[in-house]
Length: 218
Image (tube, rainbow, N blue to C red):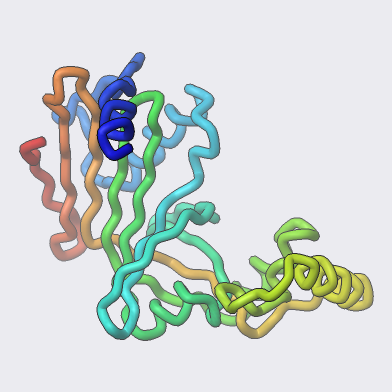
């Protein structure tokens, strides 16, 4: 069985292309500017859900955890995402704000890795973010039990009906545990695949108010 899995994995194509092109000599000084360019390329290439990113955190015992979330915004300050402060990742960030983000756009063969520190936004910004979510997103955000044990899937539907009624009664309702996080980057890496494995890696590292950049071996 193990050999069958190995053969299956080795038979899969890697970097089938068409891959994107990247000349690091032409890259802008600011990594956020380059991210905007690459993100626009991913949208143009019709990459599925290009705003989906991996968020990796570490708990109080040093145990890492990763999950996919949706990018909520990109400003000159950094990358934004939302979750409840009582969720596993919210609790992790309360103990250790160091965080890593990963974007993977398979079709053009690109990755962007972000390392930084997460900051919880002010209460007004968090409430505004929640109120601007689609209805079912707000319904799910009111449950407040993310990652807790669940005995029966039907409980989710029952809780959803209760929370939907709460929102009908109070459309401006926003829970206190809704979290909007800004990830201020200290390091950003752009990775462009090459079919011969001669991948191009360009890393930006925060240096004062600017950035120092350099190439990395693949």
